[in-house]
Image: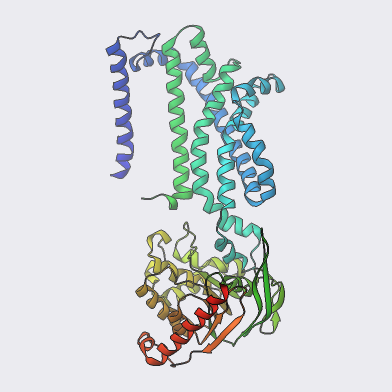
Length: 252
Length: 257
């Protein structure tokens, strides 16, 4: 029963959302160059269905690869910062400063450094935009571990590594997954920033840009909806992993 | 295992400079003894637990277990705290076997589980083997924590106010659990507590520490009965003892002012 509800309720809310959207456009009698309605989207999808498949896949795999790498970067930095106070106070200003820079301004810089390496450019922007929440949550999780947790193992002569993988790491997993959910949605911003600002004929960002150039508003909206669907899909994959690895922390 | 704390002084580095916590403290605890340490708040009782477990080294003096000076953590020590610090992602049995994963890496999981089950039966929780800590009450968590502290058959058990956060009746139940564990297993026990009744009921020796920096102020044997019962706590003999201890605590507190 709960399983069905978990599927039916979100689907139901999605349908209501689309109906309200359709109604809003219809009631105001907006032309589709002002605001496309859900009923305009399907023809746009159908017309460019091959492009959606090819570009959608481009955007998707770059986002996923970027996200996986940002988990690795975020975890490594987070672990270093969690265990060493010196590294933590040393790195924080750099990381915060770096995160405060609008990533749109970094895009041309990265594009110039790695001219022509489009996949790598895009993935680097994804990493830059997504690693920060993971890094911060892991370092806070590790550095706020209560002393008693360490003491029960330390008093038995356990080494730092045993404390880390038996206690500190599993204990930090719920925070990690919380951060990963934020990072997942940020990752799509990263891929599309690169694809829109520095279009190189690939990805949904490029399709969006084409829609803009040819004033095809339903196409632009269709791209946005595709991105939203992909985001939801990845998000639920993270939720699924969270249930496996940190299910103990979720209140039933 | 008899424990000797010999002329121990300890200081902590703080922002305001060195803070002396223990001063020339000497305590001796006999083999299989059960010693309760009481004293005013913040007098350095928990420091003693960290010293005896080898987690920190005293500034001066030494701690000897069976005449061997402690210089680093020993796997023959078990610890339990006021906070049960159970691992929320492990079920009860896997929480209990945690110390075995560090000190007896070679034995099989099944053997570890059987060791843990023995203890779990002693504390009356054998049906909860597969439950998660979040499904247990405060008293049950503390029972699991006690099992974990004993699963590797430590020679020394250090209890740092393990019953302090429990309600009065659960506390009394756990005191009896503690009696049972003490009877079934071989260990020397140090109990840090604020509860004089608990000290008198569980321990055969009660030590009152003076205010910070703490040193030995009062040392009394409490073998008022071979097998202690809760009702004994209301006897005139014990009331007398409790009054004496209360008085000693007051003296210790005044030193702080």
